[in-house]
Image 1 (cartoon, rainbow, N blue to C red):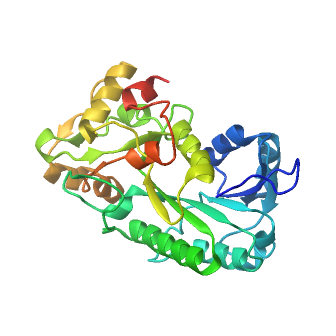
Image 2 (image 1 turned 90 degrees about the vertical axis):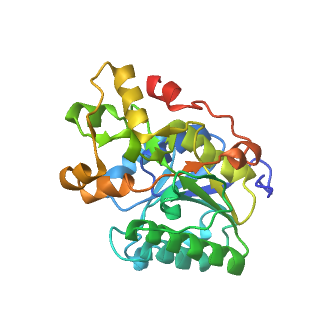
Amino acid sequence: MNLLPTRRFRMPALLIVGCGDVGLRVLKLLRGRWRVLALTSTPSRREALRQAGALPLLGNLDDATTLGRLGGLADVVLHLAPPPASGEHDSRTRNLLRALARAGRVRRIVYASTSGVYGDCASARFDETRAPQPATARARRRVDAEAQLRWYGRRCGAEVSLLRIPGIYASDRDGGHPRERLQRGTPVLQAQDDVYTNHIHADDLARACVAALHHALPQRVVHVSDDTELRMGEYFDLAADLCGLPRPPRISRAEAGVQLSPMQLSFMSESRRLDNRRLKRELKLRLRYPTVAEGLLA
């Protein structure tokens, strides 16, 4: 799709929904090239968004009455907001799409989904043609959001791109570096019980979002994952070695059921390896941090 301005010197308008850490990284990449609006439900964040180069808009995805103006403001939407914390459906995406439909200006939507929609894949390596089989309510809410976006694209003539994203890390991201977990001494599974995990550096994720704004094919899923193929324990062992910290203790799956939280256990119950060839071939992205070994040192 051609996103060049129809009038000379007119920049295309982008609306970022959910402009947190990744959104701010996107803003740095787009500054001066796009007119960017950022939706926030927190008045105190407006100045930080202005300083980052966006025009802040107050609105709450949980309150559809605050979203009335959104539909006519932007050509493209980057949807980075998570679903609600409970339930089987994503009411936030539903409210957003209803607001966008009122004016019909939006021509492309890029949505940041999760690789968790696949559930446990028994360590298989696979591409984007694999059907989702979400095992948790958290993942089912993401599948619901994807379905809503696909339907919107067909009904309203917008090109929808779904980015399925694994674990995001970066040393300058809150909670985004394994160092904190290593310092707590949180155990990992013993080798015979361990699962494959996938990762992407936050800077490469931001670059992938920008690439999708320009190059993503309509109604297409793309895995935004690096080239690493490590089991979870191997990942934390590597991080410990790079940080000069003790490697985490290894425990059996039965012991994990007693010692770890349900959230931690859910991540240790799903094993998959994402094929990222579409990311490189279709989005034309050359990863800055192709493996976690490089990204953890950044």
